[in-house]
Length: 346
Length: 257
Image (cartoon, rainbow over all chains, first blue to last red; front, side, top):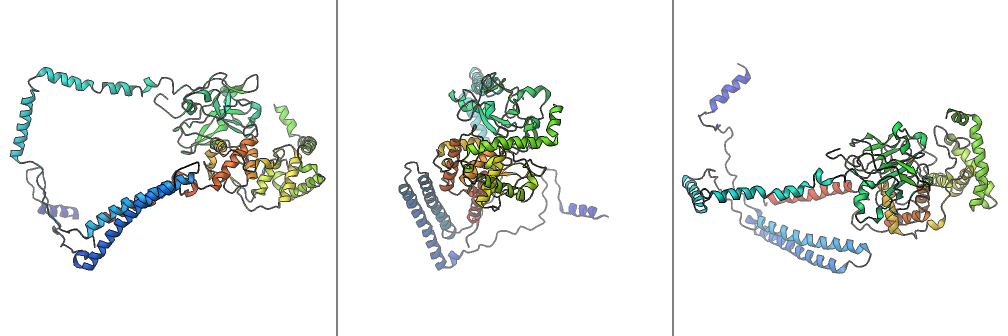
């Protein structure tokens, strides 16, 4: 007989099976019962009790001092003028004072309860979760009475219209929230302010940029011309922000169909990360790497911003640029793909 | 295209370019700067050339034309030399992804001499004028420009930050006004260039004023924890904040002695 079988045999001897669902195993470990009640120091020694009393009182006094400190901090460091040091001191002392007054009260109350209030242990037996038959019968009777009095079974018209009203109740919410979906967004996610002939301007001044001003190794943070005139300009800036970089043209490894998107080594890429939309602007001049500070997605600017590291799934969209007659950099069109992170249709 | 390349590769081409550069910039530089206008200008260039040959030419080439170990210095300007040597980054201590700051190896006069020599090779950014370095700019405007152009790498208060593959944007605390200006105008190592057409000298002065304001004024938010943001702050609150809560919970549920 193997050990396993022996074990099985052994188990069988100690189990009693009955036809019901529950298998009640005999306890292998004897119920140790309740621990003997242990007296606290404060119960045994009046000196300890007196000490605990003082401790509780001290915590309450700390609470009082805390409240005073909070008032003092508020009065002593009024938030006036441009000096932000006052704001800091004001917030610091009001906060410290209020924390002390609340914690002192709480700690004192708990210490009081634990050391000085009666330490009686009470045993409460668990009861069955199934109610007594009389209680169950009474509950059924109440339900029947409610049915009878309201007439919900009898009055079919009321019942049906009520169910109808309940069914219609969520419809306004569905319609309102529906606008959060693709239908309500329209082309907002695809279209930015960039368009044919829109000048590239400096962020934040809005001064247009001449191609000759962009020296090799320079980066410009770019917004479209006219952005500063908009009322909701941040909505547009969030999509249209562009990083302009000039590299040595020989360092650019451009695809055949995108050769005319740059101008003499000047390239413009969306600053919105294709991962979750952080601004990608950590540009390394020597390696031509663009790093996103949020999740370390790294884009190779020399190779159309292809992803060389990190969680981003697609390259940064490139803005096709050229120059106008006055030498200012302008966009050839909008981005040819939606900027920013992936969404449902992209 | 291939014809052009082959001309560029002729051995005399580099010398010709340098000669042209020397002729053009020698006159141009003398006219444009006050440093070289005094009578010791030529002596200074000669002194700088000697220092260059002794300390820099191994990597940057006998004629500053650059080698595999170091880039050409033709056209980098006096500002670049003053920054690189003046912060101790040059002469480089060891090759790697990024040259670190170290104790400065030359006296101020020697650095000036080398800067004048390199500037005499070809025009480039000059050492900034004192008027832009006295922190009298508009710190508020500087703060906005700093957040747009610099903060993504150097952190919103200039505490520095990590870049790719071991490179990093250094902390700006304690860097002199002149060196900050020179870094902007020359774009050392992986830093992009912020020419005067991009950020005017006044803009640069505003940025420096902001950085010095941050350096000299206490943080409003209390403990800075290195100003490096959510990592340090998160670590602090997870260890001390949660530690405090756990300690209270243990005390709350323990029996009184």
